[in-house]
Every structure is written in structure tokens, then in C-alpha cells.
Amino acid sequence: MVHAPWEGRFSNYQTRDGMRVPFGGAVAWMRPEGAKTYFRGTVTQLDFEYSS
Image (cartoon, rainbow, N blue to C red; front, side, top):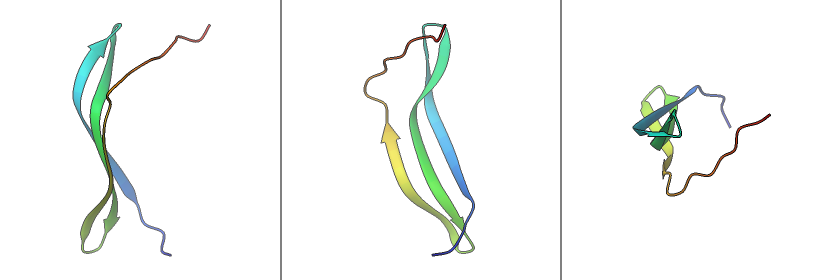
């Protein structure tokens, strides 16, 4: 196992209840030979509540 930096890229921003939320995203380890994506996802449902 080797420590490596990572980055997340997010897309398809939509406004929901006044907040801009990314509905697509991908996360990759940044390796000397290039980015190695290990997760891609799409939000299919969004539920949240504001804290008081």
C-alpha cells in the first residue's frame, strides 16, 4: 500500500431548495502514471434537512 494524493471532480450541478448540488462525480488516485479513477457516481435521490 502506498499513500497517494486524490482528487474529486463533480458535475451536473442543480439547484435544490436554494443550494447548488453536484449530481455527478468521480474520485481518482493521482499516480505518477496518471489518474486512476476508483469511484464514479450519480445522485438519484436527494433528501436533506437544515440543522437548527
